[in-house]
View 1 (cartoon, rainbow, N blue to C red):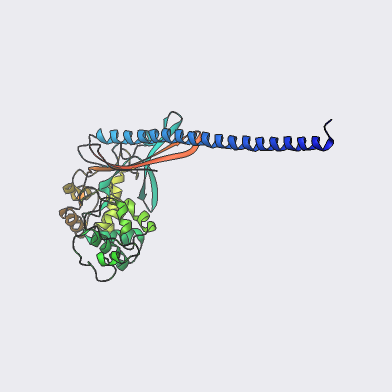
View 2 (cartoon, rainbow, N blue to C red):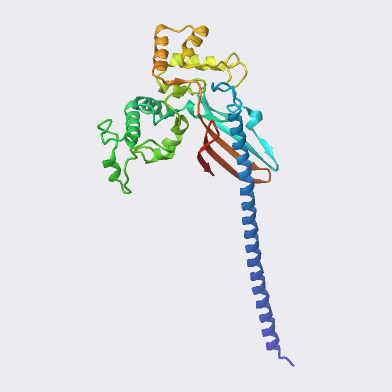
Length: 335
C-alpha cells in the first residue's frame, strides 16, 4: 500500500511537471508567434517595397513620356496629376507619389514629381543668393543668414580663406571639434552633407531642404519655382506677385488647364508685359535676373517621393530618389 505522504509527493511532483510543461508550452508558443510575426513583417516589407517601386517607375515613365519640348511646368502629367499619383491601388495596397509645395503662405500637398530646377543649386550660386534664401525661409536676421551662407560656401570651396571674418568656418574650425574632420573642398554630392556645416542643425536642414538642390545649373525654373526661391535669386516682391498670378491663370489655381507658362527665359518680360503693367524698375529687375542666367524653363533632374501602404496593416515604406530625365538613378533612399 502506498502511504498517504507518498501519494502527496507523487501529486506534488505531477503538479510540478504539469507547471513546467505549461511554461515550456507557453515559451514555445511565444517563440512561434514571434517568428510568425517576423515572417509576416518580412512579407509586408517585400510587398511594400514592390508597391513603392511601382510608384517610382510610374513617375519615371511619366517623365520620359513628357513631350512638352523641354518646357517644364505644373501642366505636365508628372508635375501635378492626382489621377496618376494619388491613392493608386495595387493588389491589397496603394501608393502615393507626392510632395509639399509652399503656396500663399501655406504648404500644399501636390501629387506628382518635383523638378529639381525649381530649387537653388548650392553648388552653383553665389553666397548672396543662399543668404537671401536662408533669411526668407528661416526668418533670421541678415547677419545670421550671412553666416549660414558663408559657412556653406566655405565648406565646399577649395581655399582656406573665410568669406566673412566672423561666423563662417574653414578647416581650422572643424579640426578642433570633438570629432574632427576637414572641409569637403568640393561640390556637395548629397544634401545630407550640409549637416556637417557649422550651424546647420537637423531642424534648420529640414526647413531649408525643399528649397535647395545639388543638381543642374544655376538657372531656376520660373514656371515651378516657389516665391521663396524667386525672391532668393533677386526678383522683387511686386514682380513675384505678377509671376505667380500669371502662372495660375484665370482660376487662380496651379496645375489646371488655364495655367500660363513661360516658354523661354527671354519671353518672361514680354509675356508678363502683355498681362500686367510693369514699371521701368520692374522691367529692369527682371531683365537683369534673366541676363545673369538665373532663369530657365526646364529641368534635367527630378525628385520622386513614393509612399506605399497596405489595406490590412499600418506598415508603410517610402522610397526617395533623384532621377535624370533619361531615367538614370542618381540618389536612392528607402525608409
